[in-house]
Length: 156
Picture 1 (spheres, helix red, strand yellow):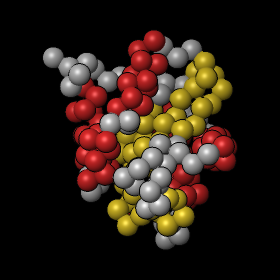
Picture 2: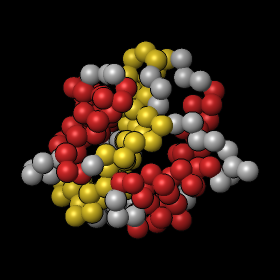
Picture 3: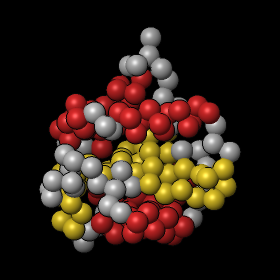
Picture 4: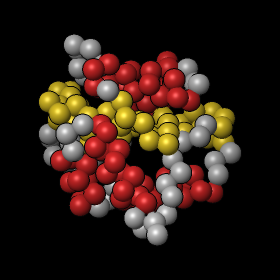
């Protein structure tokens, strides 16, 4: 039997993005969705995402990016998944291809549980697997990406 993955994963509709599609609008859309789930301020979440992106691009390969926002205080980790198959033109992966899958992590600095810390670590270790990245990259919508992540994280 597999291990339960305790981090909440939320599929985010690309319909909420609007007509101007760039890294900023994608992160704003994700911040709005994660705000509703977490009770945190959407501008605060977006600011944390943008601050982290300013340190360095969070894109991997295969069109996948993993932006993350770390807020002060306690915040149960949440993973927001947004698929944008036509690609975010101003957000390139490590191979120079447009980002098509955004796996955004929101978490707090304080009071993280041991299970949450272990699950986040397991998730990042999985992201080092080219097979895992390929499965995510082949997914055509956010719901499929969520299913792939849950299946992969719980099969260990």
